[in-house]
Length: 208
Image (cartoon, rainbow, N blue to C red):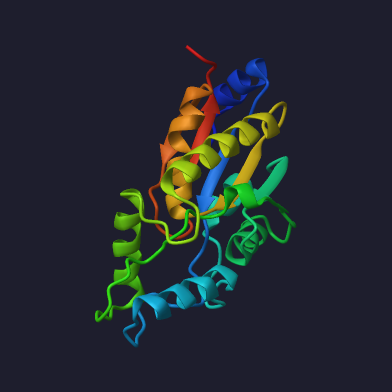
């Protein structure tokens, strides 16, 4: 059935003048991270760049619970990546989102293993683990991404002033938004996890 924002919650939001905010992960990309061949770290870096530029797989539709929840949101946002822009459009029956790079996914820089080859899905896990420990190649590091997540949460907070907001973004970065949103007074009242098309719903309760 999906999550429904109850009328009592609407009245609470109206008194506080913000939100709600719905944050979803994008749909399934066309580029399959489980597909071969196995790649070197340099090849995986090229694969990731292609993934970032890629669209959604066409053999899917946005889930009905998400469409019912966000179809009438006042403001529709997305990251600047095509898969997120398309997700927002599909979930809102054709609306064009406002794309903002501040909501882009946290990078996945692969460790430079000289002789090893892995599928992209394995490189994803390795790259995230190494990134969390400070590895970044020539891209954004974990501390920089946390600062960006704080800035992104502040932007969502301001966007939600007097209106409801839907953001289509990315699995890991969406998780990074949870703590800074909480510090701004937002409570996650529905956590749908991190799978494709999953979403979280935040209601504003004010700072304690």
